[in-house]
Amino acid sequence: MSQVYYTEDHEWIRLEGDEAVVGITDYAQEQLGDIVFVELPEAGSKVAKEDPFIVVESVKAASDVYAPVSGEVIAVNEALSGEPALINSGAEGDGWLVRMKIDDVAQLENLMDADAYKASVA
Amino acid sequence: MTKTLPLSALHEAASARFGPFAGYSMPISYPLGVMKEHLHTRSDAGLFDISHMSHIEVEGLDSGRFIAHACPYYAGDQAIGTGRYTYMLNEKGGMIDDLIVSRLSENGYLVVANGACAEKDLAHLQSLAKDFNVSVRHRPRIFLALQGPKAAEVLLRHLPESSALTFMQVLVTDVSIFVSRSGYTGEDGFEIAIDPGADAVAFAEKLVNEPEVEWIGLGARDSLRIEAGLPLYGQDMDETVDPLTAGLAWAIPRELRSEGGYIGAKAIAERVEVGVARKRSGLTPEGKAPVRGGALLYGSDSDDASEIGVVTSGGFGPSCEHPVAIARVDRSYNIGDTVFADVRGRKLACKLQKLPFVPHKYQRGKVQ
Image (cartoon, rainbow over all chains, first blue to last red):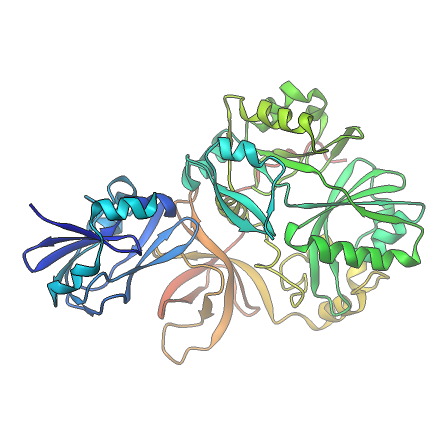
């Protein structure tokens, strides 16, 4: 079973081997409201942990999404350009943002698990 | 200290999400969400708590002359029972605030001002009042806006007298309630002021319990007014911006643009004579990325392009289904021209476009 980690900035990261899928949490999408645009990085771009690397825009405002770990973006969720509201309907599923190759899996150690995250936003 | 709205308990019961605005903790959105709240207002009716707005009463023998000194219009000739969009200017012609001034009686006017400007406006008017036989005082009220194509039929059930009003007419049924056919969405609708207390709470509850009505938060209020091309003080204009540049010169009677006794008249006459460097325009981004207030505009997408304007308000327009913005651009630019907005370092193509994005549906009635 794949392990999912959560950040204080409301991103989730699901580990699949040395790759990971990243998105924003359901709590985050609910706070943002209706998503109307997502600015995704290009596949192949390198990011450092905590870099703002994605912008999610609701009707109200633009919000940065921070890289939960350092690594390389290897794929982006192309479906979001036509249907950004996928983030609202499935933030932790179809509304994923990017797939990354992780530099150092040890960076995940300081992140929260599902229960700890749930408690942090309660 | 952030203040709490008098109807806060109603918003909490409706599970509103709150945020600070104009010194108040305001409902930003409700569980329906900004997008649906916006669309509901355009299709049915939305109820907004706008009690953060300031109500200032001006009374006295000189009230007409006083308003005509503080605001650039013939307040003394204003018909009783009508409201008017106007503003207060400083000596340089910059805007202190924009207002709706209603004439309630021979010697009584009501000034409705922006919440964020409440203290500044009151101080300004009270200082001017020293030279006039008038009293100027703030009146705390609950202020609701009911907006949308079904607003009139809903309000008819509770305030039958309201149906007689046309756009910018006002009704004072008794001392405790004030109704104006006006709003900030581009839709037909009403703004209703009631003295705080149990009656006001009951009235708001009656309205929102109507099947056509939903609570609408500040998020949708902003997207609705941008689509309607309506300016927001503090964003689209401020004390450094004159009404010509802001696209609001229409609110000054033509004769008063070249000569008048109101504060700022000299500066306005000069601007009319010389012309302004920039003017207001609508802006439609060609892509899907919203272009928001503060984004700089350029004449081309090359690195050495010169700045030709700035976005003053912008976001996504749920009724338009694309991003919408209001901008100030160099006066040589025209509707239909392509300009480029700097969004996070990228220059996005946008077309200058006539305002409003969504046609106004005001109930204007017969031409007099």
